[in-house]
Each structure stands twice: as C-alpha cells, then as structure tokens.
Image (cartoon, rainbow, N blue to C red):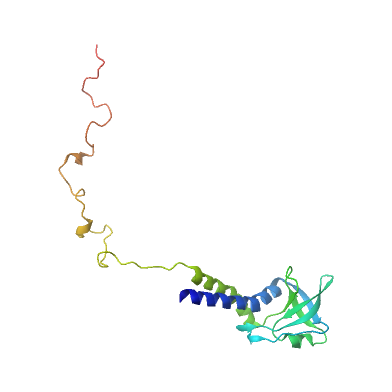
Length: 189
C-alpha cells in the first residue's frame, strides 16, 4: 500500500511539475517573448482539470527569441484567448528547451509549481524507502536492562562477581615482565 501511494504521489508531482513548475521556472529565469498564433494554428483540448488534475491546453505559435524566429507550442491557462489578442501573448521561454513557450502562471499555479517537486520527492521517498520492522524479543517482549541494574538474572555473569581467585590483583597469572628481582640472573662471577 505504501509503494502504491508513493507511486501515485510521484506521478501527481510530475503532473504538477509539467503544468506549473516549468511555467514558474520560465517566468522566474526564462527569457520573455511575445508569441503570436501560427498560420493554421492547431490547439489541443485540455485534459482533466488543470493545473491540479490535468494537462493545460497548448497551441501552435511563433515567437522571436534573440534574433531567431521560432515555432513551437505555447502552453498555459487561457492560451487560445491570449493568442487572439492583437498584440500577441506575453510568454516566457526556458533557454535550452526548444519548441516550448509558457504563459505566466496564476497565483494558484505558482503554489502548485512550488508544491510539485516536493510532492514528487515525497512520492519517491515512499516508493523506495526501506520498511522499518519492529522485532519482538525472544523472551516474550519483556524489557531488557541496559546496565542500569543487576536485577535481571539473564545478565548475571559469574566472572563479574568478586571472586577470591588469583587474578583479582590485576597482575595476571604467571611471571609477568619487568625486573622482578631475585632469581639467578645467570651472569655472576
């Protein structure tokens, strides 16, 4: 279920990005152009209810970018009405993205333009994140002491108690190094 929700959110985020993020990026960082209707212009029908649940309408148009006249698709809300204006439609192109010009997004489309990539990333995180699994402990889910008390008999180690055995002095057993004195050093006169 989590993966299905992630896939749906990712796809919806991509739809928002196409409808609203591209026009927002074009308006903020693109080049302004004036688009006019192309001869024999062909307009597509809108699909669904853009920008939140559909794809905007686009029409064939021409515009001048730099010193070159370009032909492509003008995308946005109310594109057909904008192209019928005697002065043409104020649009924006993204440098490097040839063949597309975008009308400036409205207020709600600007919000969706910011939300689109966030929704897509949230969908990706749900789609590819590892699932956390909670494991029950072998002894029936009881609490496990982490050194705060010695009341748990399972944590008892017989070496931990103060035994009277020979290694309690810390010296270890059997002739440690150093000059212990005594003994026959071997080199006498």
